[in-house]
Length: 373
Image (tube, rainbow, N blue to C red; front, side, top):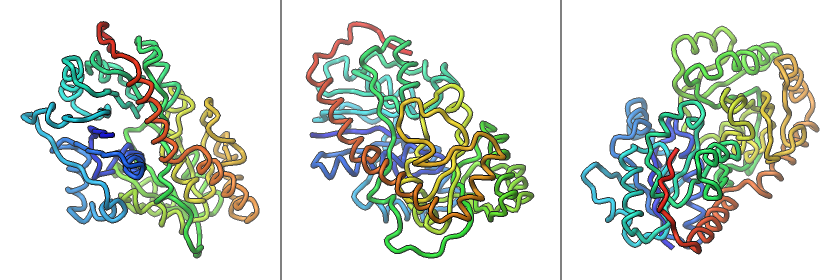
């Protein structure tokens, strides 16, 4: 079958976490024999920022890790019908221009012989609902939401059974423990500073505990203002800047442990949705300690797959314990790897997507109702 995916960017993961999952799941679909076309806007902000900071060299890790994946760019004058010609399934990610989202829906309403899905992997439906309301989704067959809490938002907006939960997952072809173990030391955190969504949390659950536990700390990510860089320096952390996601496994392999600090919206408004970093870290076999988040969907076994710290003092204790107890580290690694490999790989998600397609393709599309956020 032929699948077309409209993404913000496949080539760039600069502040664009969806690229992590997209690369893995598209590679799995290709491995199953499906034809995959990827389109992205010629002026995506993620790619522009990556090229500004690192030039063409910044694309090398992606190209090396995913030689089978390529994307093409589209512009306002391109014929969308031609881009979707002969396609069975079209997926449009929510980091696309509203005009593109609406045009795909109109094409479907006018007889497009494909199943059309809207893919939402962000908290904007609760943090900035007006941004999502600008999308005309009336021509879409369904919505893919990356967690049950987000799916429930779409159900309240009238989507009912046409919204499907499609969690992110780890690409274990790339994210796995090192073939040969080498020296490990200290704590690593990979994540973007963002817009103040977790400044206090990073201080309480990362910087202060690292100092209290006496652990060297390496920090990778983008969108760190000068004030944030100064905070890291005061805490003795080494700020390493942007990290190509394809290089994350080698960075995890050099460290004893990592920390997950969820953004506030995923704690308060969209509980149960871990970010892609949780899946990837566990897949790489590095012990993980998380700030509090409610695993309301039972994706993992908190306390077995990873440790949970109720506050900064608990985080400090967990970090100290991990530094001193190889058996504890080994137990967490084994449980986390088992959880990922049994149910949270991109191969699992590829199968889930195909099941959604078969369900929707087997039912006649009904676009008689104007359904929109």
